[in-house]
Amino acid sequence: MTLTQESVLISDVMGRDRSVNVFAGFARDVEGVAKRLDDSAANSTVLAPLNSAIDKLPGKPWEDPNEYNALGATVYDGDEGRERARRNIRRFVEAHVVPLSPWGENERRRSLLDGDREIWWEKKDGVMVLQPDGIEIQSVASKVGNGEVWIVKSVRKYT
Image (cartoon, rainbow, N blue to C red):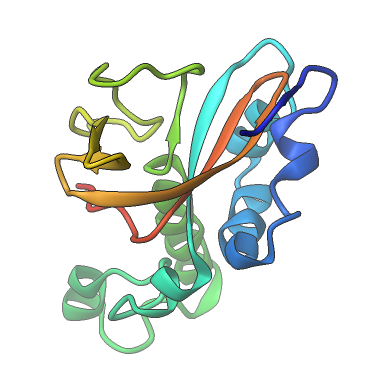
């Protein structure tokens, strides 16, 4: 069982678990999310994908196949390309942060990502599972003053 550390914030613990340090780095780079995770008045549940889950993606989280199709191989070159990549990372990170904690079982919520669909979690055979995608929640890694960090075994599907 993880004890809640009231005076500690999500921003203090995000990088502690090496198995999710890739996502933690992305979250630190997204200004709005980083501020939220450092705000004691803004509770969140972070759905931090394992490094191995991010590695299994067909492309990098900042890459969008539609952008490659429309703009070609140099889509992320130059200032405009870097801005596209930043926007895609922001969307990726926002899709993995729920602006609520504690988050009750079967409580339907949306992530920080504008236009995201509702998500919820439920226990199946004693295992926490993020729905509707059936993503197993490996553990609740941290419970701190402004929320929780959940380690998830896969990357969320988001629009």
